[in-house]
Image 1 (cartoon, rainbow, N blue to C red):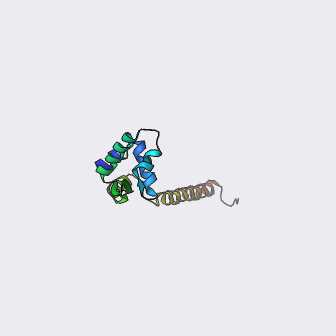
Image 2 (image 1 turned 60 degrees about the vertical axis):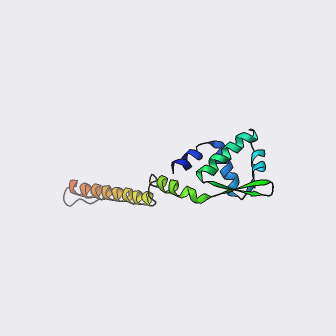
Image 3 (image 1 turned 120 degrees about the horizontal axis):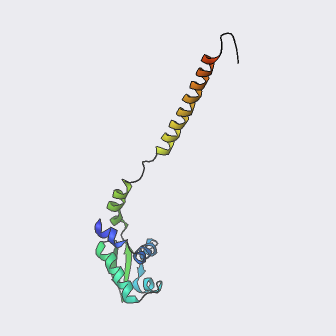
Length: 121
């Protein structure tokens, strides 16, 4: 999980992952999409490969890269523990409705108790 988190900490590597989300790409085409040198892109690809987020395959004279999204699972599961469980907003809305209803009933009951007998509203 730490390798994956470290690998996605760089914006260039995140952009590479986004490019690969739509399918395999050769290294040269990936490099062409960045304003940095090809060796710099190659180093980013190596980090992604070492973390297991991408796999590479030599096809003829081209090295093609593809995303291995399964490597995100452990990190995604860990991050999910910090999200508020679904349904909380609905439960809190229901609680707010109940609080308002209880206050309204209490005010109505208190107003009736304050009126002299025989007087109606």
